[in-house]
Image 1: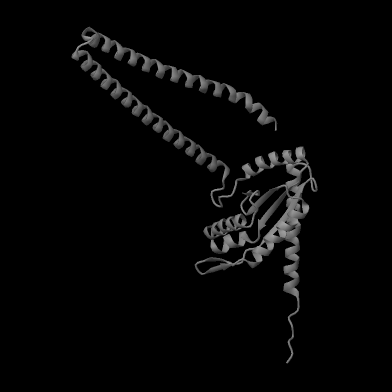
Image 2: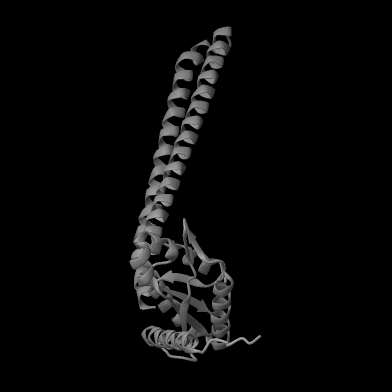
Length: 276
């Protein structure tokens, strides 16, 4: 939280400088308009007043009125075009900045948030939870068998599996969840406001959805992808980001061992004799 407090004073001079520039620019525009109007009135007085009361006076007045109207319309259109151009340039700059920010906060392969963004957000959400007395949970997800997939089918297929899982995760997350790829085949779901029960329910929901999902298809390759998921949170698990993540990874490792034990037991179980 301290970093936000130290950044605030630094922004004030920039805002003040911007306001001063805006006032200076408006002052220059007003000065130019005043000088233009003054020159127009002086020209009218020089040419028209000597002929006051005559037809020439009305003709000169009409001509200067036409000049003044034309000058006003031209200046107005030029100003409007300048403002429009400034808006376009400003919009282009904002869009470019958003693209650059997205490049630093998003994972290129899955388009989920990056590890750095997750931990930055994790710190902020944990501070909010401690201040407000709310809960916070995180899931750590490891895709099983990615080394074998990369070895058997190549890293291109492996990357497509990771990208597909990123889309799957986005389809089954809450709107408030923060989804991230934090390592090669490791993902995380930060769940603000979720207690231990909500985290357990989210694990069950994801595992059930993966069991029901269609296998990954790539040309003639068909892969059924599974995952090991661990969970932890505040205040029911730990009190710091490092502690929560460490406990969630331990929970994920325990789930992976449980899955391996179940597969081993299923493989060693005797087949049904099946009598007639």
